Image (cartoon, rainbow, N blue to C red; front, side, top):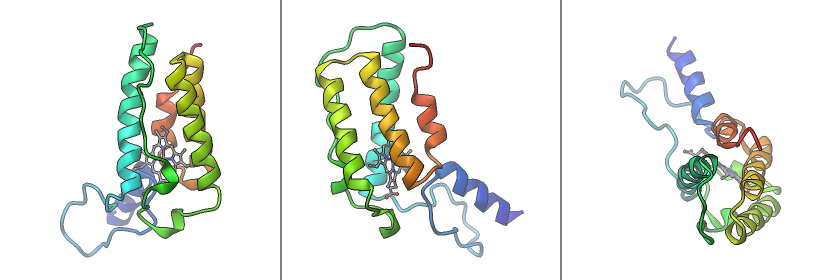
Length: 139
Ligand code: HEC
């Protein structure tokens, strides 16, 4: 039972490579030590969620709303995340963010989310559930 809770946690929080120790009796709220990159991912998710709501309400957005550090410059939780695709995909993601900053349209927003998704297909698939929720379904 404890083991399956561990597995569920792994699925929900995504990018964890180490199974939380089963002997420690404390409640594990966040089994990942928060790396710079994980922290940035959470902030990006939050900001994009707020933008999604505005876009869905057809609110007009200003320019230059997003300002993220380059993903591949961030420290990761586990060196196994440092895979060769990270840098090119981080650059592609940054490009999509810049395009959105110039023209905050639903199309450019969707291109950001597609970039999240592509990198996560290769990096860690847990957050894909969260990322899919950020997609705007009806264009
Ligand atoms: C260039 C590759 C890349 C892109 C683009 C990317 N991610 Fe990530 N993401 C990662 C990696 C690698 C991790 C694991 C980081 C760590 O734990 O150190 C991660 C972790 C996460 C996490 C888990 C953070 C936590 O709390 O542990 C979430 C949620 C997430 N990403 C959401 C997103 C969203 C939303 C986007 C788009 C706005 C996005 N990611 C774009 C590579 C990427």
